[in-house]
Image (cartoon, rainbow, N blue to C red; front, side, top):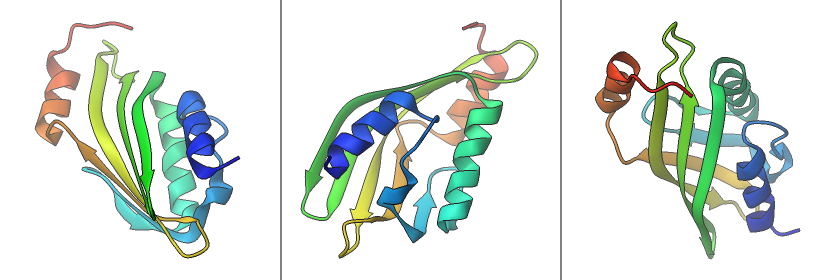
Length: 129
């Protein structure tokens, strides 16, 4: 199975049973909240999402590879564990860079909204999921 097919399957079941063997041990991750390097920290972040985000849904809209770069467009939504359980939604894209062995060495997420927009969803959303 090629890396695109593996990633498509991982997106479908996110955050459960991710294929960590496609990541380099020193993979670096960055988004609007986190910035770190190391596969163990990457696994910890996924476990955190799995533990604290309720009714999580990851919709993959598109994924493409061009040489050693993979770009995916997605929407992540979940219910926050706050007492009123607001429905949060972030759309964005990921840029993954592959090393010479074909492993993901860099995973950078970009959001189509600001951190303030996400905070507002937590405070002012009446949606329940």
